Image (cartoon, rainbow, N blue to C red):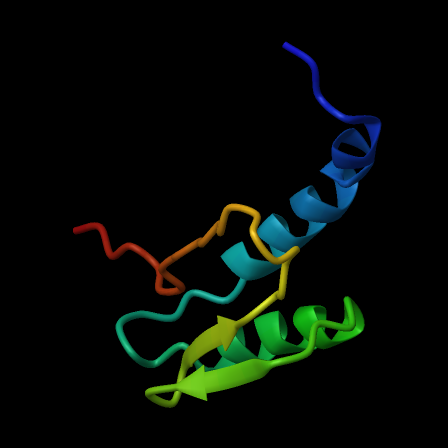
Length: 83
């Protein structure tokens, strides 16, 4: 499998963010610290068109090339509660 060197170079950054997010154990719709963390990262990456939905949801539109395919991501931000 071929993986672009730019993607490989993001490995440490992704690990850092994953570890930081796992230190913010929020549940349900009470993910305010998680939302703030993600907003900070998106703003540092200079994303534009950031919109807050339902208090803690985040929508980011990244315009692509006209006529090209559209790619969309959806993720959950809350933790998993195990009994």
